[in-house]
Length: 268
Image 1 (cartoon, one colour):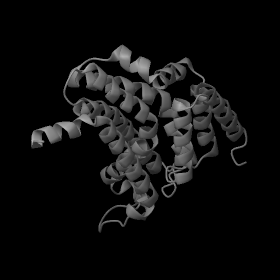
Image 2: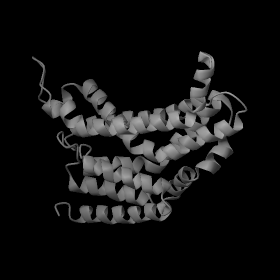
Image 3: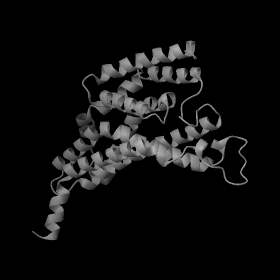
Image 4: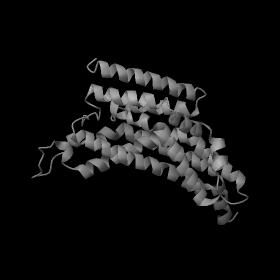
């Protein structure tokens, strides 16, 4: 077999390559999150540069560096939390492209689809990182745990996230994420442009479905691996489990009730 034939055979096994890449990305992100507190100090732990004005607090010392560190952290979290639930859609796209395409490998369009999907979560991570830096500077967010300091503020966010779980927008976005075959077959277009368009649509629906759940990281603490794991499991159940629709509503009612309790008894 020639080198060209060997390469073509390898690239035709896109299902295994895509699945392997997803598994490696998720595992790498999870390992990085576990090691994160020791690998990258938070702003409150960073040493001030000589001559730097620290009167506004340590978080104000290096705003750009703080944002960049927060962005990396949020992006890794989004990979670890969202890729497992997005894997069925990505793998189905790969299988669908293989069935539609008469010849040739489909690995590149699949990577474009997944890449654009992650690019949208990168944009979300950039906004979340900016919010984190601003909240720390305003002393509303603990610089050590990255958890909201005020009970009423945390309760309001928790209640808002719970109510969002019950809205038609949430249900519509979740319906798209839970029906990968219908989604891919309806929006399918050939080529890299079609793959990017489909990745853009899937990323938009996914963010519309989960952005308030991700905002709850500020309630339980962005640095809390247990809280990250809980929210990741909630997202996974919503998207792939048979009880996903009912589970999303149940989470909404529970979060709204818990948020209301925190608003009434912030010190409880």
